[in-house]
Image (cartoon, rainbow, N blue to C red; front, side, top):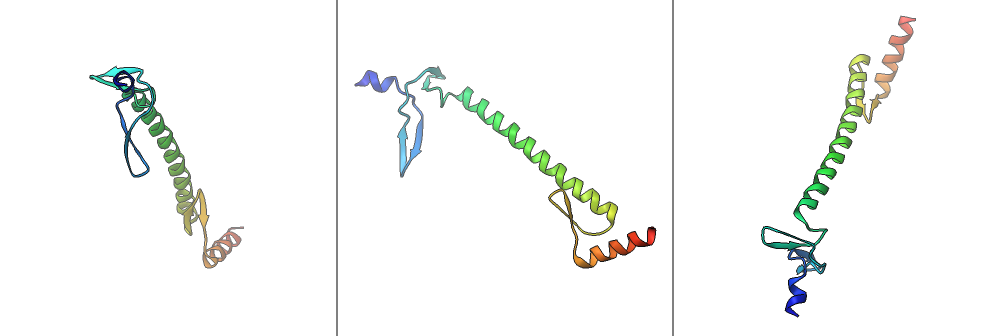
Length: 104
């Protein structure tokens, strides 16, 4: 029995209402502790880096969309940036249409 426990991953995970030991077999040993493939610190760091990169790309895309809307608001001189576009109130839209008619 002791041999079976010694071959298990030594990470404690939260399950239901408390912490339990990981039930997977250990694959690597780092700094005197045994880890399975899921809890291996180098693999955990790689997964975290990949997720951080994905989140940063999504954040940049959202920021670019917002900035495009903000740039449009600056050029129009009216409205508020909204999801890559411009949110105009009825009064702002009518004033903008009146300005466009004057320029024609």
